[in-house]
Length: 60
Image 1 (cartoon, rainbow, N blue to C red):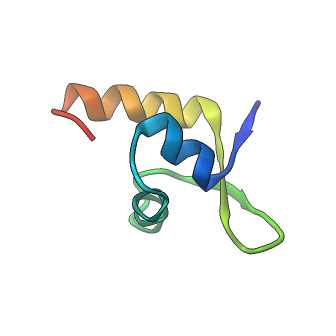
Image 2 (image 1 turned 135 degrees about the vertical axis):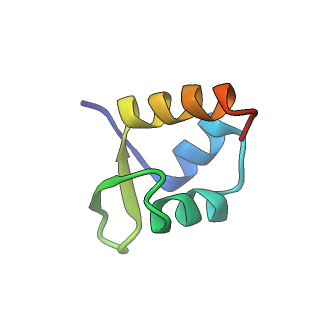
Image 3 (image 1 turned 30 degrees about the vertical axis):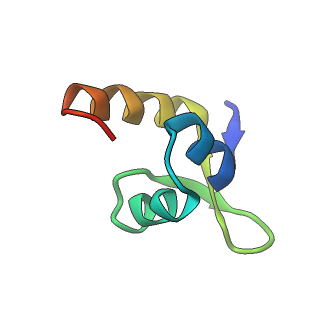
């Protein structure tokens, strides 16, 4: 399992970091843990699944 930071997820999805934090807050992306600064960390497989789903639903 590979872990991704908010910035890495934002780059992968092509969105701003604040949007990734909102997705986590709204439980659309589930954080597996928090880093030392309290920022969410995500499982890369979950992020990839979210991207596929979002594209099927009409984009990010």
